[in-house]
Structures are given as C-alpha cells and as structure tokens.
Length: 129
Image (cartoon, rainbow, N blue to C red; front, side, top):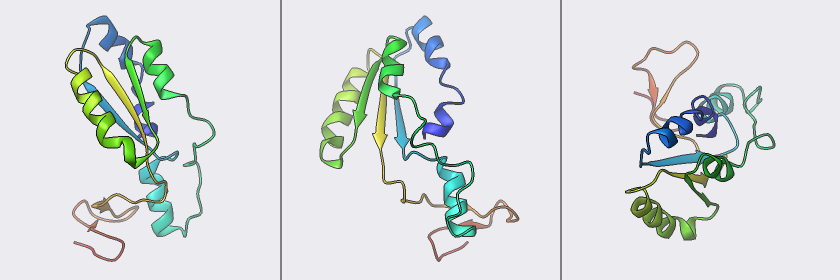
C-alpha cells in the first residue's frame, strides 16, 4: 500500500538508472492499512497515526517524475482494462499503478496483535486459526 511504498519509493531512481521494466500495483486506501485494521479490530476504530488521506503524494506524477509510466485507477469498472494496459506496457517499461480501494475493506489472514503468536491468525472478522 501507500504506506509501505513510501519506505522504498526512492528505488524508482534505481529502476530508472538500470532501465528495469516491471509492474508495481499500489493498493491505496489512504491509511497505513495493517495498523488501521488492528485499530478497527482491537481499539474500536480509534485511529492513531494511521490516517494519511490528506497528506499523500500524487503517485502517478511521482512515477512519471522518475521517467516511468503512472496509471491511476479510481473505479472498479476500468480496473480490468487498465490492468491489461499496465501488463502489456510493463514488458518494456516500469509501470506504477495507483489503485484506489475501499478504506474500510480488511485483508485476511491477519496476524493477531499485539500479544498473539505468529500462528494465531484471523481468517475473517469472526474466524481464527
């Protein structure tokens, strides 16, 4: 997601330097997704330091600034077509797809934190391993 990619976004420069073609798909929900999910599940949605909706860069412009192709996807209807374009283009160029997703959607399986074991996972909102 957008939180993780910002920890290594400078590597787009390395990709430019070595002309590395591949596809990056950024699932953008405007939050630090894993942290937000824990806060939803364990702290009744009291968000602390996980909301980034109003402070994110334009990832398409950022990718383009490094000389790459940027694609923004904001609706499901165009996702398939834009994904096909991105896959084809990524054969010769780096493509950065910024795909906006529902900020309330959770990802499973999810490790139980902060005191759960590595094999103690949530498989859904109600099902555990």
